[in-house]
Image 1: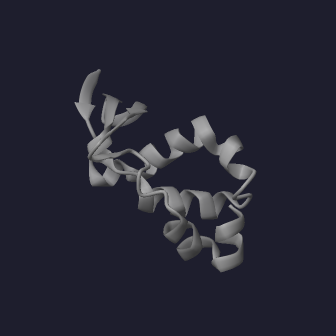
Image 2: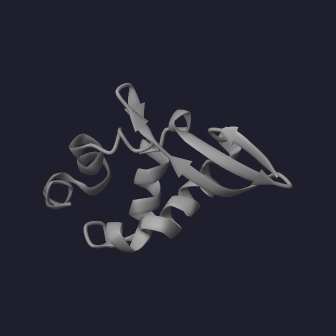
Length: 93
C-alpha cells in the first residue's frame, strides 16, 4: 500500500469512479445522467488537491482537500456545468 499526493493521468478514471461512489447519489439530483456526471468530474477534478492510496497499481482510496490556492473540485463551476449540460440544465444544476 502506498500513500501519494494526487494520481497518475492513467488513474483519472479510477479517481472519478471513487468520487462517483462517494458523491454520485448527491450529484444525481442535479445531474441525473451518470455519463454526464463522469465526464464533468474528469474535467473538474484536480489531482494536485488529493491524497490517494494505491494498492498493487490500483487507486483504492482518495481524500480531497481545498485551500486558498484551489481544491479537488474547485473547477466545478457554472461554466463547467454549462459546458457539459447546456445552458438551461447547467444553470438548473
